[in-house]
Length: 135
Image (cartoon, rainbow, N blue to C red; front, side, top):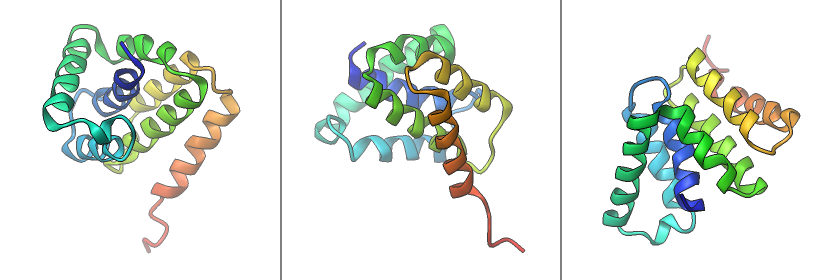
């Protein structure tokens, strides 16, 4: 697995860890990747082929094995960004399920980002997704 596949794999694990590939989460993942290098230069065919391979890995080993393979491939700054992206993705459908919390906790154990930094990222995501205008 190369770094671009590993980064996308962490996003895919975040989207799929609850057992469903939610359409809103999948669309958000694609949107988050398409604005980054090298994904912005990939055509639809290459992007689809990459995701086909990642989906096969996900099906055969599950989300935990996928992030265990992906996390060490990334540099610490890439890990931090991938963690933040995963935290954003699990909040996309306005629910933060226990399995999603478990996935982020496990990812936090696998990366070299300090635990307090991971907590800060989660706090920011909670603030961003809080329905603060609801009466």
